[in-house]
Amino acid sequence: MLKSKLKIYLPVILIVVFISVIYISLNNNPVSKASAIKINYDYPITDSLDTMSEAAELIVVGKYTGLNSTWNMARDPNNISQEDTSNYVEGKLYDFTIDKVVKGNVDTNGILINHRYSEIMRHIESNAVIDEDGNIIQKATKENEFSFTVHDPFFIEPEIGETYILFLSKDQNFNNYYGCIEPFAIKIKNGAAELQSNLINTTTLNEKVPVEKSRTINVIIDNAHSIKDNISGKSFDDILQSIKLP
Image 1 (tube, rainbow, N blue to C red):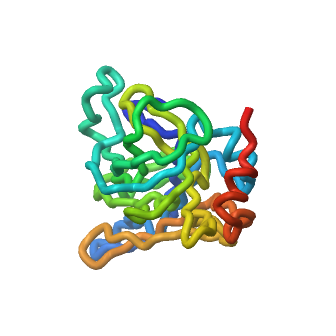
Image 2 (image 1 turned 120 degrees about the vertical axis):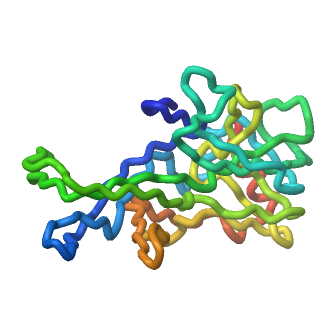
């Protein structure tokens, strides 16, 4: 997916809205200070095992064996072998050993799973006067630029050595796999399923992030859709039998 100079190999679109308050500086010039941001994630979400199964190119059972590396998922659109030097979206690549292939084909029992972890965002504050339609009435005479890191609200650190059922798509450019939908992982603990998602029975996701010295900004996920957990508690065998294959 290409957005201006930013290429991210996951079906995620970020829409960022800054919520500002007015700070009056010592010389009485108004400077807009962001107190919060709202982020919309355009990403497929479901609470249906059938939908998870249909969306997946590959369904596997296996174990995470360790963190392989981190990388910048933002790529130069003119040469995707190079990272975008002006944007940074951190992905974590985990080694995963396959014990069973439920759907799809894979020619090795060891694959890399990419988890989107965080993104560095930039914001410029100024004392420009802007009307409610977004038109500049008075140009800025002062500006303050800063950056901050926002963690992916869907990220859950996988437990090394535990058994998982994963619903995946393949990144053909970099030969790794990623979650095809949210949620995409079911952990098997003591023979029982545990659905892995931060969206279970919640409508609010937010994070306070430091931006300057003692200042923080509240990051609000504006369209956090709550899902019902229809999977946890079922047995491993029941989950496998419930997965509908084409």
